[in-house]
Figure (cartoon, rainbow, N blue to C red):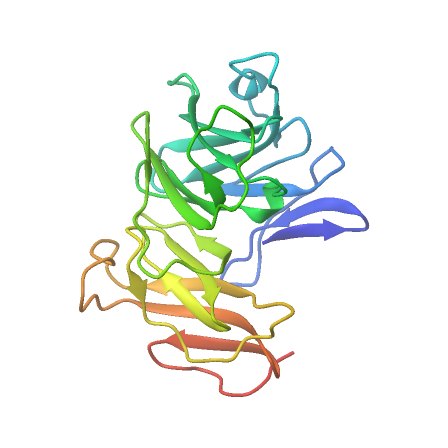
Length: 258
C-alpha cells in the first residue's frame, strides 16, 4: 500500500500477521509504484525526475534522448525480473528490463492526460499499462483517444485487443497474468491480461467516483483469458451507497462499508 503521510510520500508492506515494513522516500511528490522483492524489502518509485528508494541505480532512469527527459517512472515485477516504465516530458512511454535493455519507445498519452491517468502492472515477463493512450504520432499527444491497454515484453510493445473497452481504467493487479479494472456504463469492468472480460459484481458505481480496485486474485496463474477459468477476484468498489468489498463471481459484502 502507498500514498502520503504528513504530506510526504509513504509506502508500507502489510503482511497476514499484521506486521510489515515502511518506507519514507526522501523526495517530494507522488509515489508511482512499489515493488516488493523476494526478500520482502520495498522499493518505492516516484518523484520528478523518477528515482527508486532504497538505493536504485540512477542510470536506469537516464533518458535515451536528453532533450526529452523522463518525468515519471514505475518499476514492476511479475516474477524475478523487474521491468521499468518511464514517461518522458513529451508524453511518450518507454519500457525496458532492469539493467539489460535500451528503453523501447511505445505509445503516447492522449492530450490533456497525466501520469495519474495511467494504471501499470507487472506480468510474468514485462508489464501492462492502460489509459488514454495512442500509438506513436508525429505530434506529442493525440485528441479523441479512448481507453486502451498495451503490453511490453522482450523489447516489444503490442496493443491489447480489449473486448468491450471501459469508459475509464481505475486499477491494475500485478500477477504472472495481470488483471485490469475499470468501469463501463456505471458498472465495474474487470479484464484479463488479454483484454477478455472477467466476472465482476453488478454494482451501481458512484458516478462522481466510479472507482474499482482489485484487492486480490485467487486461482491458477495462467489461463485467465480462457472461458471457465476458475479464478476468483476480490474487489473494492466505490458504489452509490458507499464503499463495498465484493468477490467475483460471488459477492462478499452486499452493504455499504466504511
